[in-house]
Length: 572
Image (tube, rainbow, N blue to C red):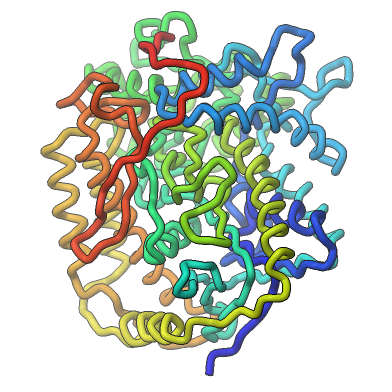
């Protein structure tokens, strides 16, 4: 018999979206019992790595306005964003900024004492609200401190969630999980659930994601029969340092940094003459790769082609005040002091526009289950996210889904939850018989390296049918190999065990990204096909949905919601 833990609401993931959801849920009713279940300690959630800012319209009296934020986001998305969702984001964000301020968030300030904002790519007004260059860390600390004030929020750190449990009517009933410190397989029962587990960017080798940020939550949803939406849209941030891939915030360009080629030219004038380095990320990343392809790049000591980010003209005082963390990263991981010399950079996998298919409210296709943050795809970002809108999305839909999950749990407070024993037995068999006790000669870590290198090579900034097909064949061959075995047979803190389960999700998500990219025969936002270089609104102005099947991802389409703006050509 599997041991069971019961709570009213289960929140899987402890980043910005998860913590905001927990606070919102708890504030809705002190009578609810809320669990936040995470495979890391809360303050090791990858949200702490967000650097540059959180977007919101704060100063309409100075010329900014919400309609501008809405249009910038829709245009930045290459018109694939659901426009009602964007409206919800923009209208809710100012109150989230001030709420964090009231909870103790140490926002950077202007000389007049008001909250400071900086320029970010794709915006027509400085609206990236920041706290030096550590906004994610400070937001996380603020939310975590606030959540500790609520006695009905219970944290389960270092639990690896493995499956979503549902009844015959497709209602959420709980999850299965492994307590990492003991190796015990357990069941969490819950009336409502929220998935806040982040994105799938570790399917790439050159990535800004933490090594723990694997797509476990996406994989659980996919295996539970839920659709993953728009997974072909992968954001490559222009400035990842070499060789680690650690992020240099867009705030560095927002403060006035230049991108330069080997001739010392600010080459963005040739690609986005109005906005230069502050064009949307997809535009800047493609421009950088073209510079490299036309042999105007530098050669990093590792042999990788790159360009440089020059901040030296900003001066020591400004860099120390606003980009101290970036300076520290440069010194520690590249041996470069950005006060004194430019730093070598290259586009790096940074964000997944796709995720679990949800509606405007964050509801999934399973009754009683929501998703928020990067794990969700409510279509805020369409084909390309503007910087600073992701932490904003986490806050807005963390609050919304927390409230809705609380209402649902209260409404169903008297109903008993029956755990589907067959699903539990199947999951226990999958984990222990197929993986933990599995046998094989192939090193799973070599499989992982081969997989992520394949994605770097075949599904990077520019794509084409030949390379996508080659990548898909390679991924499917890797899936078929007998890699599912665990050499370490210890029960306590068996990272070999959890790593192998993570590789399973990485393989599945890579397959979905490649199939989606093959099916979308156009170039839109972050999805750039050299064999289909133009945007095709007639045939592809629609979302991709991927459902699990025995043959692999079953792909369908889903309409885009238009409320205000018809598609036009993007010019920057």
